Image 1 (cartoon, rainbow, N blue to C red):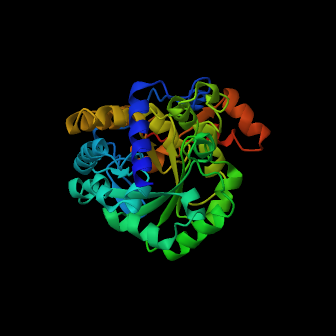
Image 2 (tube, rainbow, N blue to C red):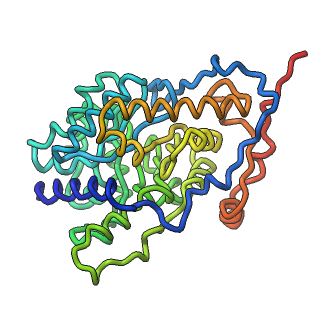
Length: 366
């Protein structure tokens, strides 16, 4: 079982690096979000404060590297590069599903390298929601946390991926009950994250009621695990592109969840620039998680990973300057326009898209 899981992880890395496994016809929705330019920004760019907090942890900027990998030798190098970069920059990172190492102790080093290289950074352990239905419980959750001395545990939801995998597990019956049990019994905060299909308002409400401490929406627009499984399929007759773009675009999922729950929401799913990080925070996301671009940098090394993350942070600072805001807290109050297909979806679903445009941080001193 562990060997099969490890091979699948290696396949995922290879496909994400070599194939076009991104959303094909659907975009994140950030193209429909327009921040309002301030010709009179009235701030000193060099004094803009990017620091933020999440689950009682301080971050130098509201940015983490999303869960990607573990369980293979190549994953060790990737996780080491990411960990060294986030440690230096004061950010955080999630580890890939730790099922492989729970099944085979020899693989623990492919994950634990993260804490070794990032002794103070915010680290998120990771297990699958469907595994909770198929035998995993508090014991395995604790093992995942202890393996990397994690600050939190992510339970990932990947129904589309499971239904397309030849070896997939598609019995999700009772998963919310299992998540609730882990959330109430584990001595670390539990985050529930989607893996590229988004979280709806209905599911966000159920997760908050179940006791999770944060939600990572993982919306449509970035890596498609339906696409990954399409490339993994060895039977050309079984290849099906129908679900390639299945799910809720990231910006839509972000608005649905932040307007529904009070717990912090992490924006992820195709975020590719400091501008989109700024839009995510302006839409009340607490943190932003980025994966694919970091994977491409991490296979090259720590320096390239640090350079990429630093560039994203600098882009965020530029946008904050241009909308006239000096802190992450005030960025969440700047006016913006929700238009296009994103506004159409949200209006049909009954969500407020107008109040964002009425917000104001205008202050002038004469």
